[in-house]
Length: 78
Image (cartoon, rainbow, N blue to C red; front, side, top):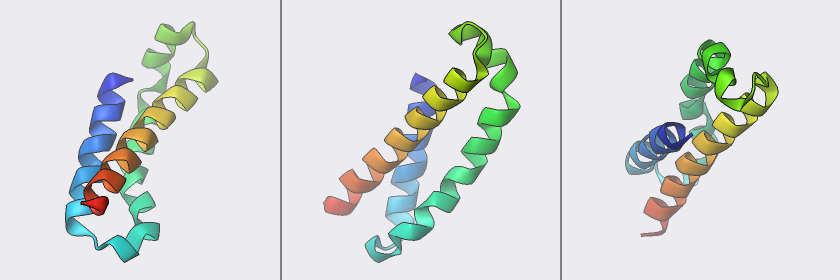
């Protein structure tokens, strides 16, 4: 989860540096490759959450989104 959050934050920082603040609605497209990776690696990672794929998916997606938008808002405010 830490790696997912860090990857999301890195992507958010890159998007914030490249996209103007008024293009906020387009930032979600940057996250699509991460969601594909979550689905690809879901089965091996589900073992860490007791084999519960839904919980694994929700935790990883939440980490990615929180990291991404945390970095986005932090860099767009300054």
